[in-house]
Picture 1 (cartoon, helix red, strand yellow):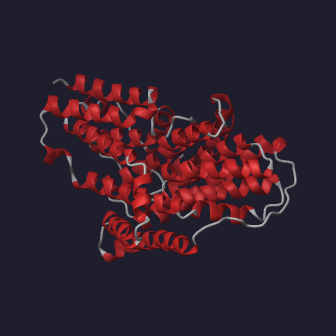
Picture 2: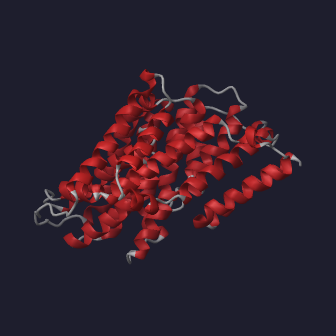
Picture 3: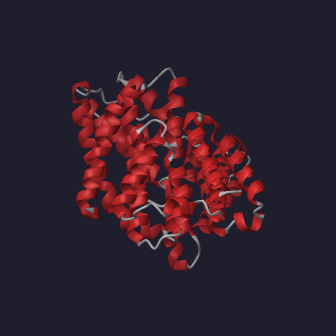
Length: 397
């Protein structure tokens, strides 16, 4: 098979994934199967340690997010914070900060799915317009996701491929993420200030939860975070630490963990696995040489390229397919970090820039809130522009 055909198959998968976003798993399973059959790759050459580490991290995050949802953790934290909000501006700011923080700890694609329901219910309870709150929360979560290794699936893919540790991500990206998030929130406030003028009645914190299970979910989240942070010092891979915690959570949690297990969106794991195998088969072929020969590489180039691509195709797909190409070039570490930022910011631009956005907006439609492209872009484009400018002024230029 010629490299041109390989490139065509991969490009078709990326385009198909954008046109039919809810069929991503099937599309990449098909693409991976075609590439494996036509090139005759062995399973040993495709299922590498990096791929297994990425899948183990995604599995762990799926278990954790399912447990947090089942225990009403998201509702408890969000309503507890918003119970003190006295104005629509305060509610807007607090909701964004909670969503951003949770997304950086447990992956945007898994947190937003649950936060959407909470934010819409809260908006209706307080008499707020749910659309601007929903859009700003999605944008803020994507921007904040650059701060940790598990903040976004694209981060997981890049980190496991390049060997970036959990604590290295925090030290490097948090100082970038905070001013970028603040800049985006300021822009969002300026856009929405005409809609955020009302006063809110202070309401008691009323969420019915099983306290013991809530404590169990909180302890699991903190344990996974701190052990991942210390894994580099212990000489253990983050994926192993997270996997052990996730498996322990499933076994120790009792009979109710069966319900958690059944509600987890396992198709996300299938999608990521098929995507990574497709990217690996693409990398083992000679197709990347077609791109390498015409590509100039610098942190700025990669940032702009990943920003633009991730606005149209999923950020995880941008990262996975770009890695084999960049792997053939002698690029410095700054290039990889610029891709982390570019994919996350690009994912925030459009509704289909991330599987997180797609799932969140589909959940909103099912709840009677239909967000148009124009409504979304009105908030997302200026917000990402502000965050990108802050990033560029911070050192890339």
